[in-house]
Length: 305
Image (cartoon, rainbow, N blue to C red; front, side, top):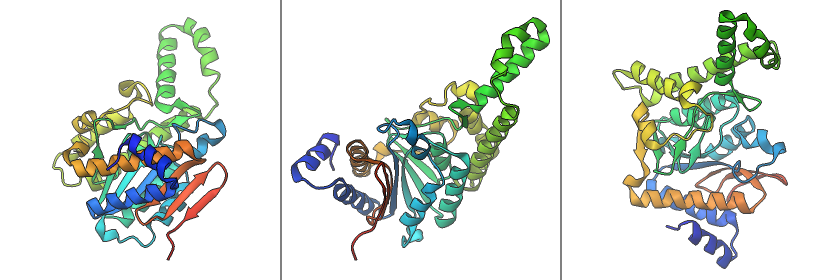
């Protein structure tokens, strides 16, 4: 298989398109595993444009991409879902989880680099998560306008406690609390509860279904993933070891060299595509069926009959 530099050389030397080479290596990965393969990639690391922020994250448009990719796949072969995403809308994430878990009994999520927030929630809905030494999941605490819901709740609670102890603190906290609109605290609490409920349910019904002490394990996972006071930052990177220690079913990418080579080659070509083309999101399967969102247009592609 090919590394980052070799993929770049192939793109430059053959004159072949990114699409052709991407599909070549997706097909090689599928032959290595014998399972269905779908790659879900966002270009949030490459396309840092404010007007794209909503589209780069998980949103309801992605359901169309997954429907396109799953059509005609043999669900009995299971699904290897390669995830690279910053996360996104809780409602859209829940909807995608519901769709994937009703279509496939056996889902393995592969994280070559980053699956944050909603991506972590999707990973938790799998039977197992494959991570390498370079891979990371992230906290699941939802955000409002770039601010962590947990952080807002903690700040409000701190203000309440300090004012109760010393009324003079009202003048310190008043300009801070004034920036909150009337329903924000309630919305934050509901979003936090919603995210935690999704992860609890998917873990109990799939990944940890057979565990005798699953309630205890799930409680620890939720505490580690959802508490802003523990994770400290929504962007915190949680390693494979950290995820395994908290109770998630983690498989090491390095345990199978051929599989690792195939996965990382796919990752490299997707990253090259997102860096060198107008594409900012790609949902593509091993059959060459692709749903590509581009800064120029939406492209839906399928192999020639």
